[in-house]
Image 1 (cartoon, helix red, strand yellow):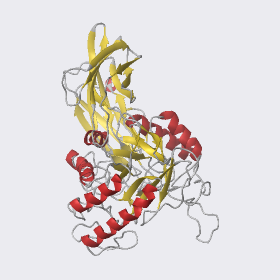
Image 2: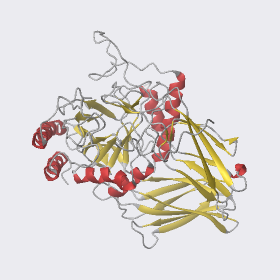
Image 3: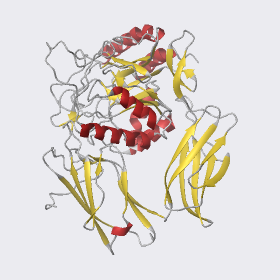
Image 4: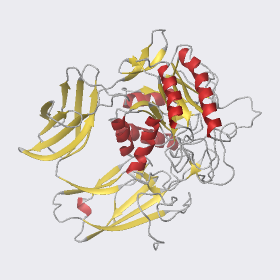
Length: 539
């Protein structure tokens, strides 16, 4: 590797100010990391090296030996580095290449030249890197699947040879064990609970889990986790409309579009409390849902959603933007007004493979989080391709959640949801006429620029211009809410308002980019949102 240019603070991407560097890398350059570390002497068996997320291609060497290369900017990967350890200091080298907007890799809103709704690129390590000791046999993960009847089915992934797995189910907050069982390694157990507690945003009840591994009569590994009993499904209301259902009942979901960007850390929140803060404020504002917009967060974010209680629609980060065609072209590539009227993006086979690989990894990594109730494979036709096949693939990986095939994108009769985007008013561009669940996946975007809290002094924008002050913003927000209620009564099952915070030049957030100012009176905002939600959720 070349001579070092300086130090970088991990886990912040090199473009961020918190990294201590603040430098763009670009698709034609390479980012190198190196670090020495020491393994504690008491670690006698195996050592694992974990990367929680590196954007995008990571080649790793330890003590001069190359480990397996990983591609994908949003999922974790690990190595058993035991065979590569040497006495004393260990020397770690990571080489990162990142094409960003090369139409080859999932990258969400990152672009080389940020402007408008496109933001600063993120390169390299942006989540934690850590090591841990494990035994010859250890638990690498678990999966919980639940039913409203009170069944909790548990299975465990194991590395190495073991005899038995034991499970303990605990009440939320701790206390006496509810149930325990053991099985042969590789099998599964099912607990049945009479009168189970259901998870919802109003009552986010989490059952605690302890899972242990036994070999030759000795406990060799123990992990702690949690699960919840909740069901995300389609239901019919009294009027016969298809609705998003939570725990078997119609449940209107209303929340902000959440980009997950930070002025100092870009993709990475500066602290865990900061990561939690956005969710707390979203709940304070009276919402019960977040659409996590074409980004995947650290798992700690999903833990807070589980723990605090808020529904999550999880987007897949897009590979590309829309197709750029002349305005006079009669063959519109973005099918927003009727089914089967848009174009597929002309992705290469390699780009499609990258999409499928990372989407599968994202779903498998996040599927234990009860807060996630909807998968969203595509947004607004950005890199959208083979929609029916992608929906089938999504269903094959996880059939326990609703699928919103293309939020505001090229509408195709597949998946569970028809999703329309409209700015600024909350009006559906067209309906499914009862064939799918109808939702308004984006609207609003009302802008207010507050001096002293801006990413840039000029060229700040919101949809349809900017408000002059907080009172005008609240007035418009409330008028749009009143406009939305007839849509809900006539069958619309969810709404997503743009957006949680300002992001770079976008000043249409409920909060400023630095999170220091809530732009509307909070009590008034909450009252408006509760009025919207109560249109359907009367109980």
